[in-house]
Image (cartoon, rainbow, N blue to C red):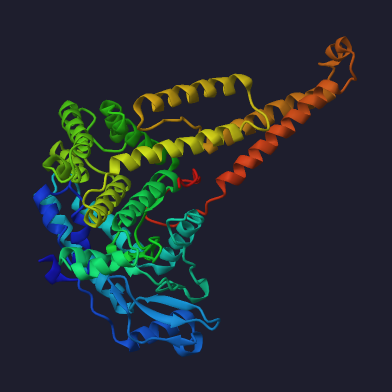
Length: 522
């Protein structure tokens, strides 16, 4: 039915497929099978869009422009072009009629929301509220200038990553309905998956002969997602095999930035702890982190939820310790579906940010396990956390290079040693508690103000006169020393401020984004 209704209802079905907190699991599994066959628009409509948004015709702007698109998506169709400076380009263009169709369908959904809420279709959850959330996400996806901002920030964050190719957005050819980037010549992961699904052995053998390693490609997609979520704070929340390209050296390249999730620093830390606790089999602590973000009634008894979620997490670890291809191994690959089913079963609600996080995990796992059925994610997650901890430990000591409290440094050193001890005993992960940059900036600011105030009083009053005399130093020695200390703290505050401003704030789905990058794990 969703496929026959077309356009917006297909997008709605795809969104509902990931809302196990709203619909029964078998409905969600069915909606995951929705396909979207989009047909190309007439060139006349595309020609008009370019003139309206860029002010000139394609022939005037580009050296060459192919009228027939080489790819068509629900948010636009992609044409090849050549810039005046000789660069090959990919130009994604949105037909004006597309937005009108979506607007009409959204209006219909709003009309249907009232009787559905009256009938209690989603229980305590509001259909009208969900339609509002869906509308916001949909029109954010349709805004290609927003996708350009997402692409720019995420490409900058992944710069220097040998496993991921960073393409350049051409801003001079980009507008609200047009997104242009330098062409990336690679194989869409969708094409590889089609060959796997249709058992096209000849094509797969050809890829192997050309040096393509499907397991390595799967691992790089998985590792890239870990970096995006736990280190960058910006992640692809709707991974599509058509939006990931594989280059001849097995590097991956993302070419779809329409649906991007964002994490605050608090989200980053909390979900990182969730993963670390799970790897160390501290399931109660892991569930505590999860419950910080899942919404439950104040009087709700969560004993049953804790029990069932612990079983899911335990099965996840046990499954990947089992022989590859076994029943328990195959079941462990569906951990995200089981998590969302338990959340619904106990009547809890998933907020939008957590939904995007789970959606990213679900779509990532679907791609990775199809590329490499025997891939072991637990091993890579443990390695990722160990390497991330090494980076974080190094950062702690860098922050102490200029000046710091001996007591504080000693306390953090003890904490580091304790966590390294956990690493040596478990061999899985390490937890290093870092203070948020905002907190440190506030701390340095307070010390600057406090010491500066005392120093200024010392210059104006006789408060330090007797102490200066007793020490045998000049009348302004102590307040001068304090003023120098205040200057040092001010410099530290400025240093932290520069770190906070290092990542451009991106206008993507959600209201907040982490202002820091913890540094990518290679």
